[in-house]
Length: 412
Image (cartoon, rainbow, N blue to C red; front, side):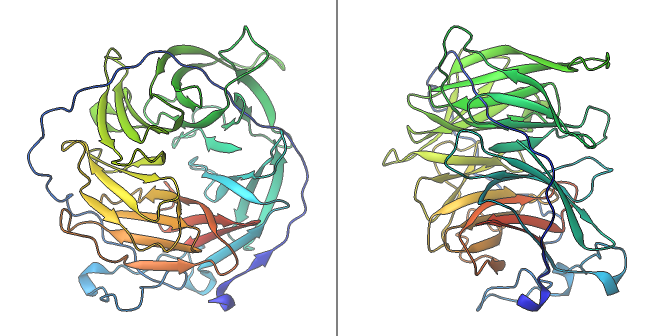
């Protein structure tokens, strides 16, 4: 597979800074809701990914038959130029990563550093499909582009750490638009652990914090007035979400996709909230040993399903919100702790997981609730533990991973 890799070193220009902070408000422990009927297997999605050079079928797995396969599309539009892996080397170890979904920025990602300093860095990289080379510029941990698939909002990028900061990506400079801080009366802040941008209402951003809270921010954008900042924000609501630190937050596409979100935390629970009824929450799952849950991700096509992963765990837990507290599947083929989970943007039955065993694995979960024994495709990053994984929302044929100082874009 090494002969497919193209290693590209870039010149770097410009730098900025990122961080993010948060605070919240109110909490409730819901009683388990009445169990729904046994979970049906997700509706058959678009065909599963096919191994085409970067991901390969694991040894011993059954090959996909003709009806299940689809020919890989050429990124450049001509099969002669198609590559399976593009590799970029950053100037520092990488931790966070996010795809841009703007229609005019097909292969643009933001990469965040993992260094033991207050000011971590973010680098924006873009792939030139004709030359197969990246261009890069630095801005200044956790990162997310505004999920504006129509390109009608300002080209914004959010970063978190101490506070939530919003940046405007531009040429030649990326500049800070605003810092969202809900702790105006103190010189100290509770660091943010994660955040999510609502895909239906792009004026909503949710953050999670070590102070047990989640905060929902409302953003406002205005027309440019010289160099005056175009973006501002205010706290719409703040709640005590867990009994201990909150480690992740994610909006659900259920109920219209605007008002429902879930969080996970150090108390080992997954909790779901509705912005229209914040007087209570619903406990979707509690780890039997109360092991902290670090990450969660909603199925992009079927909002009944979400995935979560516990601290130092080698398995990913799949949950059905209609059947609280009982996992419908466990994905257990990793040989070291799992660091990242990403659902396919175009299929309800495919999810990619990545971990310290250097592997990125793609699973087909159509047979739930029957056990899922093996992944259908696997990729090994021989040079390091995979820290992060992202499945391109507007590029479903491509998955991005990062390890050490490298970011790789892989065709599936």
